[in-house]
Image (cartoon, rainbow, N blue to C red; front, side):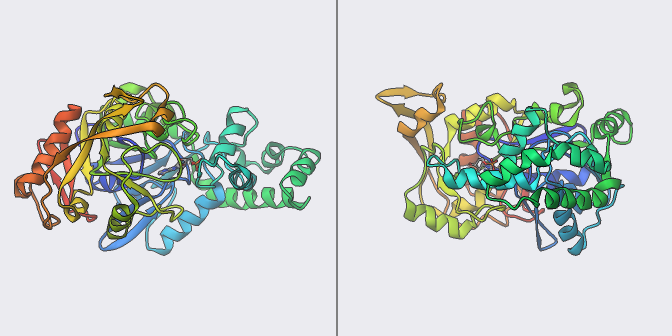
Amino acid sequence: MKHNIVVVDGSLGDSGKARVIDYLAQEARVVVRFNGSGNAGHTVYHNGKKYVFHIVPAGVLYPHIVNVIATGVMIDPIALVDEIKALRAEGVRIEPDNLKISGHSSVITELHRIIDNYEEDRSNNRIGTTRRGVGPGVVDKVGRRGLRMEHLLNNDKIWEGLGSWEDFRDIATKYRLANDYHYDIGRHLIEAGEFLRPFITDTSLYLHKAVNNPETKHQILFEGAQGPLLDIDHGSYPFVTSTNCVSASAAVGSGIGPQHLDKVVAVVKAYATRVAAGPFPTEMPIDVADRLREHAGEFGSTTKRKRRIGWLDLPALKYGIRVNGVDSIAITRLDTLSEFGDLKVCSHYTINGKSYEELPLDHLDLFDAVPNYIGLNGWGGDISGAETFEALPKAAQEYVEFVSDFVKVPVNYVSVGPNREQMIVRNV
Ligand code: IMP
């Protein structure tokens, strides 16, 4: 690798970032997860086996890579221990020399998960969260009363961070918990802390050394979670996650300077999907969506929920590219579109009689948007064996070029299947 590369999503998440990370990691030395939490599910097919990651970076599948869970990741220590144990059971080596966890990461406790579930169940205006406790965890983090991973190294700090028994009694009443549940939460955190202790370190210092070390310099991959339209600041608020998901958060979340983010690759699925509630103007009619969903397995990796499916939304993609700052696009799932005859992509919207080439200021106006489509030819044949761009049917090449021209960013990677070798690389 010649550059440190940040891999982010082009719009709504679930684009196959881990698959692109897995491909690029062949030449990398360090892979860093810098944002998100256990809400993310990253699927990788490796030697015919399927692996699902939540916060462990996908680089652990390679023996030559050091993986970092950096400060910007909200960590549920109990879920992380389970994830590490499950990966080890699959034969994946995870030890303190190949996985480093930031002591400055904020902790999600069982209570945060309980609150997330409670709020989702009682709200009429459901966001449709993944119920992993991310929102309530972030509330405690920014309220400056949360636990951090470094606190797991000292049991007294765990109890201090959990707050007093008296405070917990009120919480227990509100969420119908046993009064001694507080004790269980602390005990489980202590157990998880014991397991994770050797992995917890100053990852900013580790990365500072890595960006300056000739052996690892410019060979660092930053693995983003979610996508710009789910970003707490730039997404379709309030139908967003509670953390930042844009490329710039790779610097903040990792604790290194932005000058070390050499290139940004946005991963863009050849069609659109959205999990849970929120505006989705290009959503397909249910019968068409059902057909594609079954064929493509479009179910959430974390929650198994059905993903909503739509045509590629180019104004949304333009926005994602703008707020991420993108040098290169990786288009994934092009093979899935072989299912269709004619294809379409949304070029602009009409909202209350007015034409919009960009997203409206209030993203929620997209609930009233009528998409305007451009028709493109389908190719209708299997492309999963294509090894070069030129080997793709003309119409498939035109689809890719159309997207690239529209958003004015080169498409350097085209994925035509889940396996590592099913990645066409061009002009890199
Ligand atoms: P939370 O992050 O669990 O609070 O969920 C907030 C919103 O972000 C919901 O609409 C989720 O479906 C969505 N979301 C969170 N993580 C992901 C992801 O990895 N992919 C797609 N959507 C996600």
